[in-house]
Length: 397
Image (cartoon, rainbow, N blue to C red; front, top):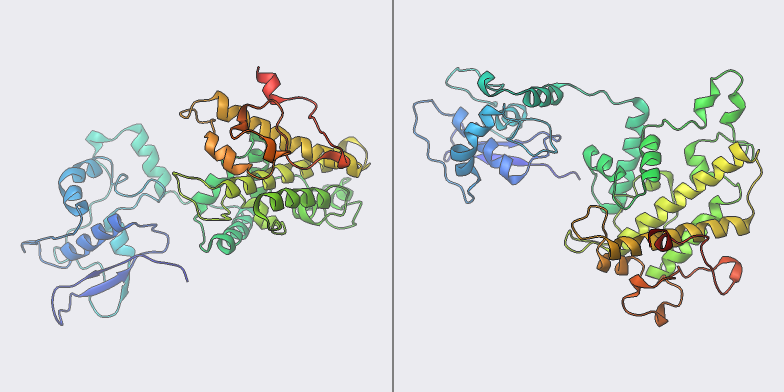
């Protein structure tokens, strides 16, 4: 069941003005805004010449009425709600609230005065005008984008127990744990703008590109990442699962298309802003790096190599190199950047992320971040050693 915000106004026993309302589902209101809606409903329900005493357990109402009211009016009420929500004032929310039970139809306006909207011309700036226009302009969502958004929200709801807002999904696409290449890939995947499958089906002379030559099925992005039998896809997910077992002792959940697109929001365990979860971060790294490697191998096979597939040894070596390169990057960012640097990663988080996944981890020092060669605990082709072709730490030294 989706949680909703609501407010209640009570004047006295059997008073016709008593009312309970449910706020719009898209309002994204907090307790702070809900109190302001209750105040708005109360004021609208009484004559303008009636003294009103407002009492609240928090300081939000008094602060809003005394300190913020003039600022909100000057800014066209754009500062009266959280930045992540649409520009809506308490008056707007009260007007669109759903009345429950007995009571007057909202909003009750005994004064007959129209609601004041907009901002003062004397305080209007180009920035405020642009923000106001954008907030009131209805953005049309492309059909393909809307379908993908629904799949991602469903996947995250199954994982986290609650449906994320669209703004949160788009924010997760730019997660700081993702590489720039994967962010671009994920953004295009969310918009269905990657040229695969159905994109070629209606282009004369290129219809054959819509079908996977290996499986004789539509070569959609979903097919490429989780369904294709071409050498590489299944092996890469198997390697990712093996590393996940080292860290958690449990197999990696079977990758599904919608789950891959929503991996930036998936929570394996609860975490807080002060102490991010190591398993959650490792999950994001495994899914994003493995997914993008599958995509690169497919492109190399179809575009560059004329359909020739890589060997299993090559696929395994490429995946191990990818994960070791990411490990090298983490070590560098943890030891060569300050905590105020946006690209920096706290050393403690790196330690929690790669815990139990390192080669000879029992023999490594407690702070192994400065070691010149720290590798993931999966070796290439059963060999005893594995060294990436180049070391990020060497490149930065």
